[in-house]
Amino acid sequence: MSDKTILVVGTYDTKDDELNYLADVIRGQGGDVVTMDVSVLGDPSAPCDHSKHDVAEAGGSSIQTAIDGGDENLAMQIMAQGAAALALRLYRDGVFDGVIVLGGSMGTDLALDLCQALPVGVPKYVVSTVSFSPLIPPERLAADIQMILWAGGLFGLNSVCKASLSQAAGAVLGAARAVEKPKADKPLIGMTSFGKTVLRYMVSLKPALEARGFEVAVFHATGMGGRAFESLAAEGAFAAVMDFAPQELGNHIMGSSISAGPDRMTNAGASGIPQIVSIGCYDLVDFVGWQEAPAKLQGQELHAHNRLLSSVMMNADQRREMARAMCTQLAQARGPVVFLLPTQGGNEWDRPGGPLQDADAFDAFKSELRKCCPDNVTLVELNAHINDPAFSDAALSVFDGWLDDGTIPRP
Image 1 (tube, one colour):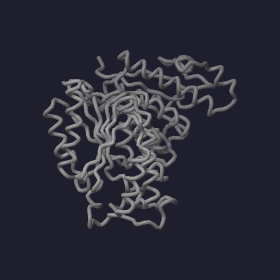
Image 2 (cartoon, helix red, strand yellow):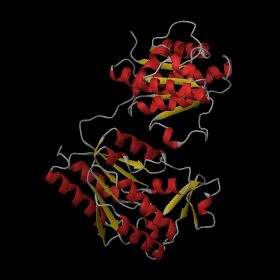
Image 3 (tube, one colour):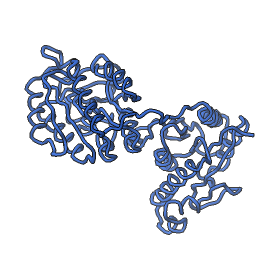
Image 4 (cartoon, one colour):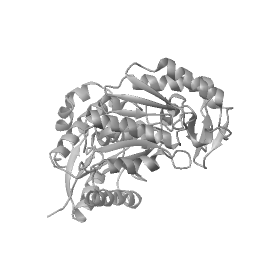
C-alpha cells in the first residue's frame, strides 16, 4: 500500500524515459503515481492514466484543433489550459496529493498554469531547463511552487540529470507526506508588511486579532509575498485583509522586476473581502540590488538594504502616480474598503528628521489621494505615523465595527 500519490506531468512523446524515471523513483520510495500526457503530435510508449486527448478536452478543445492551428505556442496554450483544469478536478476528487511537472521552456510555460490552478498547500514541483530564470515573471509563479534545474537533461537520461530528477521525485513525495495544509478551523486575516525595522503595526495587531478568534498570516511584500497574498485572496481564503504595505504596486508601475503582478491590490476586492488598506513603504521602489535601477528612477536617492535589495525614493510626481494607481485598483472592489491615511508618515525612515523624509513629496501624495479616492472607499485620515499605536488602534476600531455590524462574521 502506498501512502501518497503524485501526479507526473509532461510530454510523453519526447520525454518518456525521463518521466518514467521520475515515476520509478517515486514508486521506489513507496509512493504511487498517476500520469498525465501533455504531448500534441506524438504518443507515449505506453498509455498514460490521462491522455493528451483528455487534457485538451478538459480545456474545451481537442488535439486536432491544437494540430490544425499550425503553431506550437497556440498548441501548448491549449494543453496548458486543459492540464490546469484537469489537474484541479483530479485534486478535488482526491486522486493525487502532489504534482511534479517536467519540461523545457515550453513545458515550463504549461507547468506554471497548472501549478497556479492548485490551492496553496498542494506540493508543486517543476523540473525545468529554465528554473530560476528571468524568463519567468513573478505573477506566473504559484505561491508555494518549488523548482529545480533540469541540469544536463535536455535530451535523454544521464547521471547528471538523474541527480536532479531523483531529488525532485523524493522532494515532492516527501512534501506530500509532510505537508500540513492550511486549516479552516479559524477565519484567516491576511496582512502585508515588512520587517519590524521599518513597519511595526503587526506586533500589536496580530495578538489582538488572535484574541478575537482569528488566525493572522503576515506576508512579506517583496514580490512573491504579495503574489501569495493575492493568490489566497483570489481563492476567497481571507475573512478580511489589512493590506498596509502596497509597495509592490509601486514597484510594478515603476518598472521594477520585484513585482507581485498587475493585479496587486485587486483580488480581495474582486472576492468581496473587507479591506483596510494603508501606505506602508508606499514611497519606496525596490529593485534588484545588483542591477541598475529602473530607467524611470535613475539618478534619484538610493537606499541599499542589502546586497540583494535596494530602494529608490519616489519623487512628488511618482507619488502622485502611486496614489492614482492605488485608487484605480481599489475602485474595482466589491466589498467594503477603508483607507487609513497616517498623515505623519508611512515607514520608520520618513519620520520628521528621518533619513528618507520628503515632506513636500508626501504632501503631493496625500493631495492626489484625496482628489482621486473612489466613492466606494472610505478615506480616514489619522494625525499619526503608521508605526504609532494610534494607527493600530484605528485599524482595530474599523475591524471591530465590522464585527459588530456583521460585515465580518464572528468566529
